[in-house]
Length: 276
Image (cartoon, rainbow, N blue to C red; front, side, top):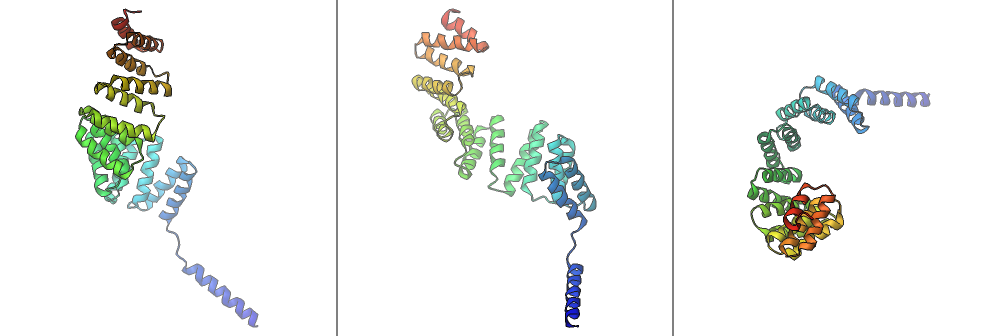
């Protein structure tokens, strides 16, 4: 009898636990399923589940955001933009969605809106490294070199080991005529990434503009060691050989550029080597 009573009590407790246990809301269930499909790279089913989650709860900003991301992965930028914008309407304090919408806007050539969204993302998340770097790149592209340097300064404070930030800041300083500052940044770029060919190319050009032709030639030679098939390195080095009164070496470089199908090689060969 006692055993029967004990089993009955246990059964009642289990039944009470099951009945009182919080059920997963349908919208969350679809959201969780969608995440599982996305993890498996199944975009079709992921999109379907996110759409169901949004249909059941139109204010589910996470589902809207993930749905926008799936559309972006599929190349459907119109729907992606729509759901990123809807996410912002529901949750205007989520920095990441502004960054993603900025990328879409850049893709369709709307640079004004893209810059605005990047700035909004940064205002919401002061240490948003990717957004700061992206805004700096845009400032550089638009010729706003001082503003670009400000952003790259901030990016380097956040990630002092990221070589691209030094490369872009160095290029910005170069555009402003600060060749010594540019060389210093390219030094850091090369230190962080010794096999980055463009680091040597950019430092070589900066040295050349600084009228240190020997240093320029040395840097272009290092660039050629990293990638001997990039023809423009031979053009640059040839020009600095010529400035350093070494026409034989300059002509050798221009001829090599011709072999690599660089159209500038022929014109410089005619100018410095009599077409030989």
